Length: 182
Image (cartoon, rainbow, N blue to C red):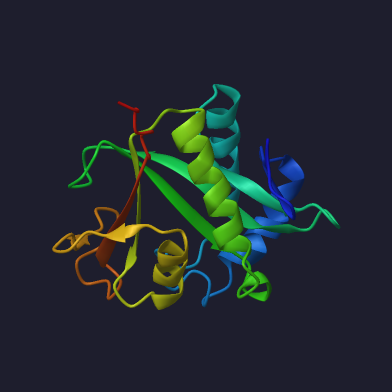
């Protein structure tokens, strides 16, 4: 588990499936994420995340508010394959219920995920990407201090080229290496 002042990123539970299903059924939340998901698709996603977590893989964890235990969405890390033009690579990402937007939760949780990637996983860099029109997610990347890779636009391999969200922008965060004194 990863904790911040207000949030904890934890493994998924069977009881989380209906709540994530509500998030996945919201067309505004899923607008840039490949479209809405059915309850069955959401169940499969949670089961896959639970399996990955059991073997110690970094995942998009359940993001829970500490004060009341509310599930806000999914935030974390994902290993990308060579089907991405910059892969294999590690991605940081977020998906929150719409009523939790604009409260700093995505930035807070993603910053904790980046700290985990650079500290516990010793990752040299972590990427984030979003559809070109998704200014909300781009703003989170900027608040995280990530740098936009100029000319880094790419067609998302999981989206059809006819999908208006298929073209993505690419950001990167690089681990800061302490300067040695002379």
